Image 1 (cartoon, helix red, strand yellow):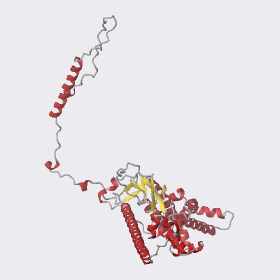
Image 2 (spheres, rainbow, N blue to C red):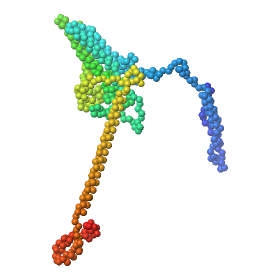
Image 3 (cartoon, helix red, strand yellow):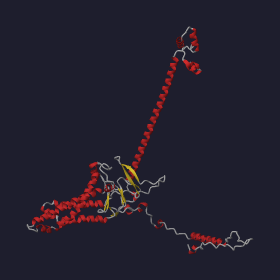
Image 4 (tube, rainbow, N blue to C red):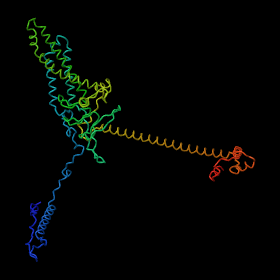
Amino acid sequence: PPRSAFARAPARTPPARSTGVPSTGTRGGPDRSPPTLDLAPWRAFDRTLKRNDRRVRSSRQTTRPMRPTPPESVGVTPPSASSSELPLWKTWEGNDRFYCAGRCMTGPSPRNLLGTFLIVSVPSAIFNALVVPDVASATSVAVLAVGIAWPLWCLLNLIATGTADPGIVKRRPAPAPTLDGRVRPRYKLEQMPNGKTVTVKWNDTINAYQPIRAHHCSANDDCVDKFDHHCPWVGTTIGRRNYRTFLFFVFGTTILCVYVIAICAYQIKLKYDARPDTKRRAMQAVSDAPAALIIAILAFLGFWFVAVLSGFHIYLIITNQTTYENFRDGYSWRENPHNKGFVGNCWEVFCAPVPASRFNFREPPSRQPPDRDVLVEEAKEQEKKAKRRAERAEREAKKEASDERRQKAEEEAEEAGKRGADVEMGDRRAQPAVDRSGAGAGGVMRALAGGAHSLEEIKVEVEESGYEGDRDRTPKARDESA
């Protein structure tokens, strides 16, 4: 629109208020009537605002933006939705790094992985080049084969550990707020297959409760299944999917250090035996094998680190704990809810199948495999619903059985009452009629007229006549006796 259409409106300052000069009243005092207000400046100000608004609206209607030309008109077809989606490794939200078009994955510190690789590979190469040939020529070729194969085994496990998915849990969309408006609990209890109960935590990164034994790694910014620790030497997190190769690397490096120290000492002994018997024989032997001495010192220093680490992880394997659980909870043998016994714990670490990754990093998000955590939760929810239905049906069945028993008991009691009433009525009807004509005062008079002179004779006469005392004196007693 032209600039004239957006001319600045006059400042919105209210006009001066004319109060007038106070006039004197009839008694000489000031006039108490309210001051008059001049509305002419306000009306002019309002007309100016409306005029500027009409100019702006007219300019917007006359200057419409030009629509872009559709791609079909110039011979270009728009890209489809599937081809426009990027692979997952390009839109990854964590701190992990990807190489070779998503085929290789490392942690946030790939330089640490490269440094550890050089720490193991360079001394091993010097060891095999300067120490192993002398010992192998004096003993066997197996020394050379082990010297080459064992470092390669350690390096392969190191690379497998540092470039594998440690068991990252999928992120979910933000959940809808609860119906009652209450805050979702931070922790909840989860029952394990063995019947024991553990506490799981809500994770704001994945917008769900963490799986059992999972934890959020702040270095990778990922929730990792069976989180053990974040290893700075490997440059990534150690979890369920790379813990086995990590153990192979640690145990293999410990054995490699012992092997290197033994072979270096044996080469120095060979140099010592080749020297004549002099006072400086030991020093001359060491000077003849300087590489063996240096490599042995480096292996000795590295041995103490990896040996302590190996011993600690052997304890964790036997007790079926992770490093994080050991420092946080410190389970004893009986308290540990994940304990499966010595054989079961070792089987879970070394022989149990490693689960597949939850992601296909080279595919777009729409083609990812289904989230097995969601499937497990749905199965658990279905199981809970089935259990609640079974409990409800059992309660209803018990209630119906109780109602039937109570109704049956009431019917039996009613029938028993009817039978008892019939029996009582039959007994009353079977009793013989009592002649009460001589009862009462008439019976006494009859006894006296019959010649009874003593009181005992009168009592005998009255009892024989059916007299029952004072009951005959009331109409109610006579009706009951009748």
